Amino acid sequence: MQPATQAWWLAAGRLLGTVLIGSGVGWLVGRPWEGLACALTLHLAWVLVNLFRLEWWLRHRNFADPPDVGGVWGEIIAQVVRLHRRKRFHKQRFVQLMRQLQRSTAALPDGVVILNAQREIVWFNRMAARLLNLRRTGDLGMRIENLLREPEFVRYLAGSDYSMPVVIRPMNGEDVYLSLQVVPYGDGQLLLLVSDVSRQMRLEAVRRDFVANASHELRSPLTVISGYLETLGGDPALEPDLKAPLAEMRRQAARMTSIIRDLIELSRLEETNETVVGEPLDIAALTSLLRKDVLARTVHPRDVRVRIDSTARLVGSESEITSAFSNLVDNAAKYTGAEGSLEMRWWVDDEGGHFAVSDTGIGIPPEHLPRLTERFYRVDPGRSRATGGSGLGLAIVKHVLQRHGGTLEVVSRLGEGSTFTCHFPPARILSSTRAISVATA
Image 1 (cartoon, one colour):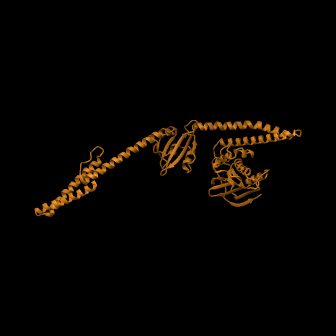
Image 2 (image 1 turned 90 degrees about the horizontal axis):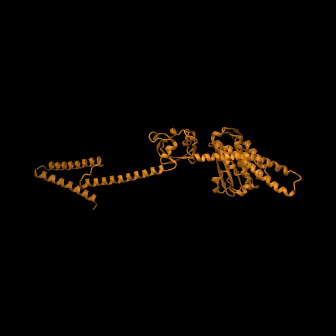
Image 3 (image 1 turned 60 degrees about the vertical axis):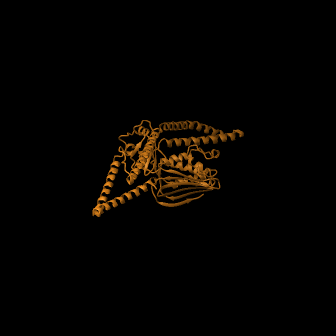
């Protein structure tokens, strides 16, 4: 039999014995009910004393020993002691884990800030205190945007897409750049990761300056070389066996000129991340010109269509939008055979404006899609060089869309074709008037 069961049987027997003894003594003196009442009163007094001892010990259990009571009260006290020991064990284990966590986060090379659902600072490590100039005594419980007021970070924190970090330059830092990324967890809580990317930003600035300066310096010699090659190619006295090498030299010079032109354009776009204001653009007229350029190519898709589903205008930089759309159309035309088709479409909905270029070309393997907008990245290097591609077109498209608050979406199936869609926010759309216009080759 379990000890707890034995204790209850003992308690029941003790109560029964008290009733019998009280009744017997009362019967002997001729007052059985008074004897029973006295016995129950004594029993109740004993229960209250034990209850008082238990309550006093519970209030002072940190320094007082548990009372030595048998029966049911002893089992209750034993259960309380076991629960207290278990709680103390888990508390000590939790404290040890918290200390280990604090030591590990303190040793991290990056800053860590824990924010609650109200964006208030709950905890931060030493690196976060150094990078963000936080004080443990005064900044705990403060809203993070009240302490870090850079507009880029405030907009980033107010949004819902935290997949990419935001880079800021704090006002109190000299040539210091911080990368901030938010990781949601729990019930509305946020983990803010802070890292110093000043060295990477300086290296990136040096790289951009080098590319921009080298491109500008190479443009003039290439112009001279191309001019002389053009002159030599048109010379009637040129020996026949030199015509083929000279034509190849002219083709390579034109390819280098195209690469340098794209590098200069990309360097110009990377100089600033400021949002472009621009002016209203007639997308129907622009796509019509792009269609004419495709049809003017020596080899082009048989079916070139333009589909305009809205007369709404796009507000942006004409030169940059033209460059981005032209790169998309040029890529589609290069990788689509003469028997294929190409379609340009413009439409507007509640999510903004959308420009898509669809083709029935060779398609892109899925593993290459995430890296398409990297500079000089080619899915098929041999074919890209054969078609004169520089590997910079989609990088230019990405930067143009970023400067206009837009995004690029790529959907492709190998051997079936690709669709590149530029999504622009509603703020970039001037009107929502609808119309349908289709042009074919």
